[in-house]
Amino acid sequence: MNIAILTDFHRGSYKVIGELYQNILTPFHDIEHLPTPKKEQDRIAFAERFPSGIVLHNTLGKGFLPIDGCYNVAIPHHEWSEYPIPWIHLLDKFDEVWTTTNHVKQVLDKGKLKRPCFFIPPVLDQEQFIPKNDWKIEGTPCFYFVGEAHFRKAHHLLMQGFMNAFPQVGKARLTIKTSSSCSWSSPREDIIIIKKKWSRAKLLAEYSRHDCFISASLGEGLGLPVAEAIMAELPICTNFWGGHKSLLTRNGFIEIPHEEIIQPFTSDPAFYAENQKCAYSSPENIKNTIKKFLKTSQTERKEITQIAKEYFLKTYGRENALKNIESRLVEINQK
Image (cartoon, rainbow, N blue to C red; front, top):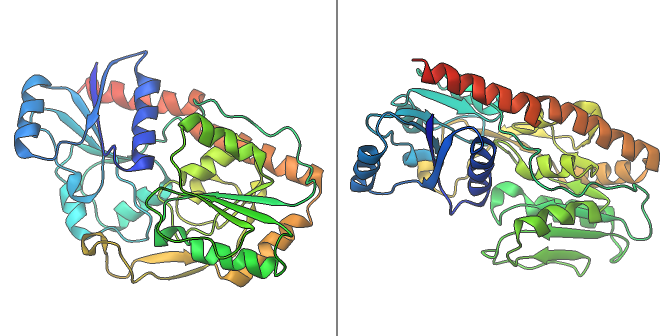
């Protein structure tokens, strides 16, 4: 079976997801993993040398353009509660659509997508994670977050909630790993902003060095850092909304309460959908959740990580996720 994966390599999380599909499928199929073609002549050239193949499109918005003569599968990721109507029309030109979470599938169903749509989770346990082996908090509590320097990640809310929880500098530490494009700086010396580019191995190894992964993100289509924290057996504080609802079970993390509110902002007008909503966690709710986490015992922290991982692997572990992907590919190949 000839399969091509077309990925937006310049989008960090998309690159990771594309490589995960490539690595898990390569032992069983002939796989090519290439950048999403930007020009019509590039799509034509690809179609000529890849006739009748299966193409997985791992892109965003206007990047969803099917390849003539191929079986085209769109894999959209979307954070808010509404999907832009022009983008729905683009997806309707595909043979089928795969989603990585139930959240994205529900958003597309609500947007009246006409093409067949399947919840096909990627395999997210195939990398070399370094699990925690001690959940005792010794000395200064260490909190950790990973996210692009984008307003959607709500770094501002997280930092304010942290400072509200610890008015005195140095009582705890918050480390934020973001991208080199980040133009803002830390408001306090106990909030550490890491902008340098890390290898994938270094990024994954970092999780278990902390006491808690905390995210106040306004919305996640998947939430790859949460998945990585689960695999590292790091206790998690976050909201239960969007993609998080596919990754997490309620007794496997400490929930940051949120309000579902209208999200009127966008980094690009093309990304906007009327009445789109997000999950807003106030700094006060973030502060209270941090305090709640600090009251947990070492045994409780270990237990919630085990519950989280067991639940997560039922959907995103190799055994079940690969079976679902392969079953769908076999059905496509039989058409």
